[in-house]
Length: 90
Image (cartoon, rainbow, N blue to C red):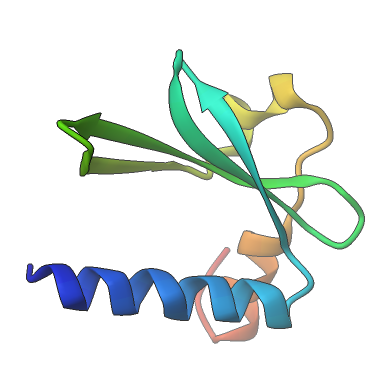
């Protein structure tokens, strides 16, 4: 995928997060750079980890599985609710 398309995707993602009241916080994930997102109540929605090589992001990994996030605190059901709102099974 071209870099400009990736950048546009990331911008759109953060704009949607802002509309939903999701906050974004930089964190270390397994010793590397990452982001934790929280719903308006402060519950964890997701964690993104970034693999960086020579100053360029090589890989982005997203964790949304509540079982893998629960050690970080209360976990939001926002992702499940949003899928349900869009007509998908939770």
